[in-house]
Image (tube, rainbow, N blue to C red; front, side):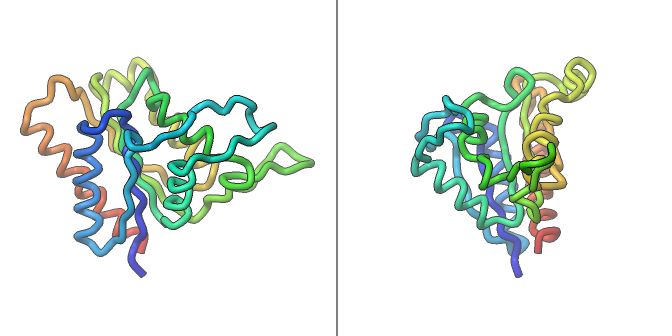
Length: 197
C-alpha cells in the first residue's frame, strides 16, 4: 500500500522558501510511489481564536474541516513553515488550536491526568526555516521551536517520530545553499514514502 502523505505549508504568505521546500519534499515522495495531498495556510480562511477554550465549540470553517479530513486520510504528515519568535507562525498555531480538539486529536481520561492519542499511527516530518543559523537557535533558544512542534503538539496527539529538518540562515543564503536545502527536503520526502508504506 503506498504512503499517504499530507503536506501542509504553514507559511502565511503565498510564496516562500517553505513552499519550495514542500514542493521538493512532494517531488521526492511522489517519485517513490506516495500519494500526496497538500494544503497551504495562505489559502485557509478561518478564525484562529479559540475564544472559549474547550468549553464552547465554534463551528469549524470549511478550511479547517478539509485540513482535518486530509490529516485523517494520511499515514504520514509533513509541515513546512518558518520559525517565528521561537515557534510557529500565529495563524498556523491557530489551525492547531481550532482543529486539535478533544474527541478528534486526543481524549482526556476522566479519573486520571492521562489521555489517549487519537492520531496515533501516523509519522511526521517538519521542514523549518529560520533567519538565524541553526547553531545559534540551538545555543540561544535551546531549539524551542523544534521542541514546540515535536513534543507538545505532534507527540501529544500520537504523530511520531517528528523528524525536523531545520535550515538557516535564510536571509543570507546563496543559491547553492538553497539548492542544497531543497535537495535535502526532496530526500526527506523520498524517505517518507518508503518508511510509510
